[in-house]
Structures are given as structure tokens and as C-alpha cells.
Image (cartoon, rainbow, N blue to C red; front, side):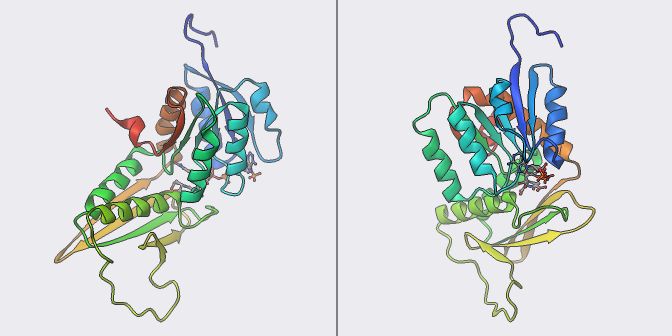
Length: 255
Ligand SMILES: NC(=O)C1=CN([C@@H]2O[C@H](COP(=O)(O)OP(=O)(O)OC[C@H]3O[C@@H](n4cnc5c(N)ncnc54)[C@H](OP(=O)(O)O)[C@@H]3O)[C@@H](O)[C@H]2O)C=CC1
Ligand SMILES: O=C(O)C1=N[C@H](C(=O)O)C[C@H](O)C1
């Protein structure tokens, strides 16, 4: 492709390039006129392919066991990283923040979910949490997902918990005496989270909000991984102007 004069293409490498997400990201980057897909790396391949190719930005969709090593490597190489891989709890986020402190100009975006609808669903859930004393999350995914609960559910639960603390709400009403472990789901920041893995699904989440005499259900469905691509490309395009750590797409979407 010939490069337009005065606007060099942004050089992008993809980690997890043959995976469900990584392969779509490669196609999306390859199809974008302002981006240059310079390296595609999968498990067992050489990370230095990325730096040798002069990548300015890496996109990581690998798995929670390896993602921290990948982020560390990118920071050490002076390469900014857009991270979609799940598995980021508060401790991991703090570690990445520490790694970035001595650096200048390197950006890391960690987004639990790149779909616009999912970002809004998380925002709406945090808003509802101020008014609804009962909040529960049901996340539903394809059966090949390696982790549970999903990163989106963990992020949503934290946002709900933060909103509840701000609104000075006490514990959720729940007088259950559970006779079977797991019957009430897992607790993330005190918020019950229920994980479903089912053939036919891609990525879905419901946030159930309850108060006296009414419930509100906030639901998001990704029927196709194409739903994540605009968010990934948005982060890739913005990251060089956003040094330091950015969590979630919210600030990138502000108008
Ligand atoms: N933030 C978001 O919007 C989204 C996040 N995700 C998250 O992205 C991650 C990937 O999901 P998905 O694409 O479905 O998973 P896949 O298993 O399909 O893809 C992961 C890929 O990463 C490769 N890989 C494993 N280790 C390394 C490594 N050290 N270096 C480079 N590549 C490696 C795997 O290779 P191999 O198979 O050979 O092990 C595989 O090709 C998950 O954590 C998922 O939750 C998914 C969708 C959206
Ligand atoms: O593994 C997936 O598929 C997804 N993972 C992310 C998560 O853990 O929240 C985002 C989305 O739900 C799809």
C-alpha cells in the first residue's frame, strides 16, 4: 500500500494473532488505511519479531497466564500496548501502573471489553447501583472461554461496588442460608456473579437491579467478535497520545 505523504502509517503488532480475537484484530488492522500490520505473533513465537519489525503499538489478546509478561516486555521495549486479555484484578493493574512510572511516553490501555454496548452497559450498571439495593451479574460466554468470571463481569462488579460505597449503601438484602456451595454464585466485591458457558454463545452479560416492587435488567450481547473491532482500533489510534495507564474505553469515547 502506498503511504500518503505527510502521514506515516502507525506500525502495529498483534500478540495472540491466530486466536479468535487476534485473527480478527489482524484483519481489522490490515484493512485500516492509517495502520500498518507489521508483526503477528502467537504462542511459541519470538516476541522480538515485534520490536524487530518496529512496532509502535502492540495489541494483546492472549491469555491471563501470559499477559503480564507480555505487558512487561512491551514496556521494557518502549512499545505501547492495547490489552484486551482478561485476568486483570486490582493487584495486576497496580503492578502495571508501577512499571509505567519510570517511563515516558509509553501508553498501556487495558480494556475489559471493547464493544461500545458493553462499555455503556457497565456505565449504566454503575448508575443504577446508586438506586437499587440488590445488584447481581449473570455473564454468559462461549464454552471455549478459559476463565470465569469474565473480565467484564469483574470490572462491572467493581464499578457497582464503588457506586454503592459512594452512595453509602449497606450490604445487599439477602437472608439466604445456602445449602450448596455456589448456589448464590461467586462474590466479586460483594456483588454476586454467575457464569454460564454454553455452545452457541459469544459474549453476553445481564446486570439485574432490584428494589421494592420493581427490577431493571441491563443486558448486552456481542453476537460476533466484529463488535470489538471499532473499540480496538480506537485504542490503537489514540494510545500514543495517552501515556501512562488507561483502564477501560470510557475516557477514549468521551465527546
Ligand atoms: N477485551 C475484550 O473486549 C475481549 C477480551 N477477550 C479476551 O481476550 C483473550 C483471548 O481470547 P480469545 O481470542 O477468545 O482466545 P484464543 O485462545 O482464541 O486466543 C489466544 C491466542 O493467544 C495465543 N497465545 C497464548 N500464549 C501466547 C503468548 N505467550 N504469546 C503470544 N500468543 C500467545 C494462543 O495460542 P495457542 O492457542 O497456541 O495457545 C491463541 O492463539 C481472553 O482473555 C479473552 O477473555 C476476548 C474478547 C473480547
Ligand atoms: O473471552 C471472551 O470471549 C471475552 N472476554 C472478555 C471478558 O472476559 O470479559 C470480553 C468479552 O466478554 C469476551
